[in-house]
Length: 77
Image 1: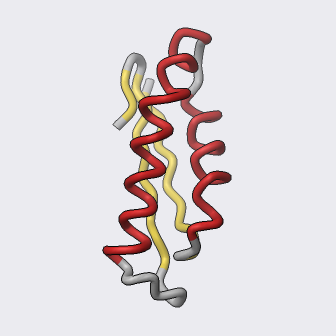
Image 2: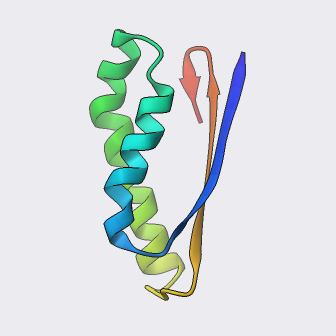
């Protein structure tokens, strides 16, 4: 089974934590998966979003960041 999360968020660093919490909550299908996601995936997603906002969008508040997450049994891409 594959699921896809697609959404946009404002180019505002204050939105990152809530966004990461949302994505991780949708990815956690079991306690084992949740444990792995708590650190590695969370940190990677926070870093990717902050880099997109700061460097990709140049901190321009009129721009948005698009997030696409593909969930498959045993993997998140």
